[in-house]
Image (tube, rainbow, N blue to C red; front, side):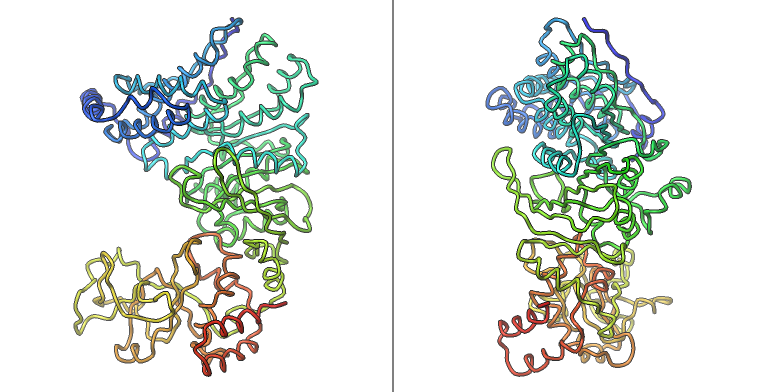
Amino acid sequence: MIEQTGWAQDSLLEQAFCDAEAPIRQRRSGKLQNQNRIAQVALDLPLEVCESGSPEEILASGRVLARALAAHVAQEDRLFFARSFCGSVIATFWSSVEGNRAPHIPLRGQFTNHRSFEMQEPAASLAVSMGKAAARMDVIAASYCIGAAYTALLPEQMRSRWGVYYTPPTLVHRLLDAATIAGVDWRSCRVLDPACGGGAFLAPVAARIVAENHHLSAGELFDALSRRLRGLEIDPFAAWASQVFLDAVVLDVCREAGRRLPVVVEVCNSLLQPAAEGEFDLVIGNPPYGRVTLKPEVRKRYARSLYGHANLYGLFTDLAAQLARRGGVIAYVTPTSFLAGEYFKSLRALLAEDAPPVNIDFVVARKGVFEDVLQETLLATYKRAKRIASASVHFIVPAMGDSLVVEPAGTFSLPCRSSDPWLIPRSADEEPLVAALRSFKHRLRDYGYEVSTGPLVWNRHKRQLRRTASARTLPLIWAESVTSNGEFVFRAGKKNHEPYFEIHAGDDWLKSDRPCILLQRTTAKEQNRRLIAAELPKRFLSENGAVVIENHLNMIRPINGTPQIQARILTAFLNSEIVDRAFRCISGSVAVSAYELEALPLPPPERLLTLRDSLRSTGDRKAFEARCAALFQA
């Protein structure tokens, strides 16, 4: 029997993680009610589905059933139910994989969970079925399926705030391949995952090291794995799971070497750890994301990459740049919002100067890739080196089974001003468009316009919304008033929308009495157009004196006097297909921000004057689109 290795526990950190969202209270009566609710709901669940079928089908249906059971657990106990249930799944998995072969390697001791959740039927049987099914799968695929079950069972508020979403194996392998192309040598590299979750990356990294070092003896390979792998994780349960799956991947090596892998996953808050600068050849992972409020000392540490609100994944990107050695590689799965958002301009500058990108893969599908995630994501590979001439771009589409369709989309270069949005082609056909955009020096300001967001956040002023007009009300303009064909229609038909707003003392800042172009502020890449604009009619404005504009609309207004380009021409131009394509090359989120609109490269204003005659002489939309497209030819 190989000696059991202990587990380092940080009880204060566990307490902080558990209490991140709400006070956790353990009540015996509450436990009993939980178990009664679970037993009651289980009467109507088809648990027999977990006794047959492929391992993937069993785990998928088991996750659904476990989630249904968890829905009947009190919120303050959900975390402990998730840990106890998935702990039982992992214990069964390990028992089946390890098989009591000599030398026997027992399941690694879990962190002490003082707030245990006693597993009873039917949850206990369901966990055993899932664990047995997982043992019939490849270890890396099994770890993802169990990790997906764990995240699905977490309290929703906690999961959202901490950005806990694990990475599918297909994307992991794609990112490992990209890291290899960027220069990672698996025969010698030191690797860190600073937010390792349930081991989505550490276990595949270990498998890659084993495969690339077959010339080493078992003892030498064991020593290499022990020295060169490290993970950090704030959730003690996820850290334990990560270590267990890592153990499973290297089980044969450990048996042959006669030793057990030491604990390489540390339970800690990575962002607060002293930086071991330049220590790692590869920093890899899927860091958490979401806005976070920082203490002054933490903001000071990451000040170089911060502008305004802090986002967790931005902080982890800065941390990776601190930890990777010169010439080392950073390989991350992140949202796309840093590509253009104003809050990320300092981070873009840091990356451009210290760790420029060498490859970016856009994940085309949002649904069905990351469990419950709708945000657009990408795989990015950076290298800590001087500026790189250009980076490659691909689109990756999950296909049937465990494969990916990879479509090249060309290359892109970083902007001259490092903090500017990154212009990246979104298809192979758009390289000429990006080249033209890169040559353009003009912006909306050169046309005589500025952009701001509608000032009214309606849910802060619910009591002032009115169904009918009065002497004290003004028309309330919602995003739905801007139609898809570029027309303005005063309406408020959606839920919670009312057509009028009652002005109170001190509300003058909410009034808009200047002509403007209205442009929808929240759109999605799946829409036919991201830019949807309409003029606010001067007649409507003069009839009402002023309006109140809600903050899901951008207001494009003349800076002063008469702008170079008439609002009618600019509105039609913004609604054109070519401008929409251009905007997609810088946009990284569902929000059409004022910052992105003002940063969008545009043709010289005098060239837009050629559109005036086209608008006057014909209603042929195709002809107008052709005229607009011609303006973007380099």
